[in-house]
Each structure stands twice: as structure tokens, then as C-alpha cells.
Length: 249
Ligand code: FPP
Image (cartoon, rainbow, N blue to C red):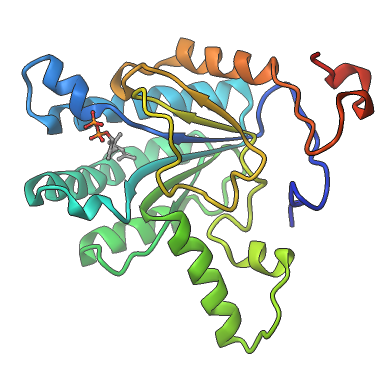
């Protein structure tokens, strides 16, 4: 089990061990080009590929991408259908590549509202890549931070727990097998968390860029990591308490 940022002080590394991303701006990217919104999602998949490759090469261990939130079901039905279809096609075409690159795929969120085909493909992709020990790529789909916490609490209640500790809760979250994100990136210019990993982002460094997701590339990722490196991660301590190598001020 990985330590909690509020109970232990995590190790600070030069390259973030876990990066979590809100991939925003696909619709606006398409609109600027007089294309339908879905063309932006399609192009967004290219940015996903480039980011996964760059993370693997840079030595990032966990990459978690927010692909579809519990609130995204509110979008127009044809856009929702397109996205579901894109997930199916992406699983169909990319899983072998992920597998041959030793990448483990995980999907976070509720699967109850997915079609049987999508749910089956997700399960098959997770099973196929389960033994890989390289980068862990997690796709959050029908995921919400509140859903995650409530789901954990309800599981604990069902198991008869009466008082819940941080560790008990963390062990039931959908990311229980991962360290908390070191770096959170949101593209598209908005500066909010939008019900992503609410519990897990407690001490993550937040990075916002105006770049629209389809324009996000390796250079943009490196810029985000450079910004991360310039941060002083104190986890509640004073600057003076930090080892010299970690002081930034
Ligand atoms: C946000 O942009 C993006 C989404 C809700 C969907 C993300 C999906 C992808 C990047 C495609 C493929 C991913 C996988 C993992 C198969 P937006 O539509 O909110 O853009 P806007 O804010 O400009 O309208």
C-alpha cells in the first residue's frame, strides 16, 4: 500500500511518479476549425497517444486520464454515443500496442451504464495487460470523485465498519493500488477540479494550461513537469524543515 500524503510525507522525485490529467478543450479545438465537436475528440485521442508515449519515456509510473465524468452523461445524446464508440474503437485498436509496450491499462469508474460490448472490451483489455509492470495507464470513465468516495464508504458499511479511518477509505478507492498524484494537469484554460480525484489530489501540484487538449504534446508535458520541479512540496511543513535539495525558496 502507498502512503497517504496527509499521514506520511511522500518521497519527492524529479519526475512525477503519478500524473493525473483533465483533457479539456476538444470541443473548442474543433469549433475553431469549423468542425463538429466530435472531430476534437478524435484528435484528442492522438494527444492521448503522444502523452502516453512521452510519460513512458520520461519514467512516469502512473498516468490517469479523465475521459468521461459522471456529469458528462448530460451532454447531447449523439456526442455521448460518439464518445462511447470512440472508447470501444480505441480499446479495439490500441490494446495490443499498449501490451507490447508493457503498459498496464485500468479503467476507473462505474461500468453499470456502459453497453455490454464496452464493458466486455474493458474487462478484456484489463485482463490482457494485467501482468505488465511498466507504466500504468488509467482511464477514468463514468468516474466522479464523489462517486469514488461514496463507493468506498458504502463498501466499508456493507462490510460492517462503524468508524472509518483514512487508510481504510484509501484502500477502497478506485486508485488504491497507486500513489496519490504528484502532478495534476488541466488543459483548456479552466481552473477547476471538476469532480476528478477529490480525495487523491489532497497534496498534488496543480498545473493549468490554456492549450486545448488536441494541441497538448510532449513539449507541453515537459513544460508541466518543469513547473512541477520548480515547486516546493512542503506537505504542511515549513521551508526550513525541508532537506536542502528540496528547498525552492
Ligand atoms: C473534454 O473536452 C473532453 C472530453 C469530455 C472527452 C475526452 C476524450 C478524449 C480525449 C478522447 C479519447 C480518449 C480515450 C481515452 C479513448 P470538451 O469536449 O469539454 O471540450 P470543450 O470544453 O472545448 O467543449
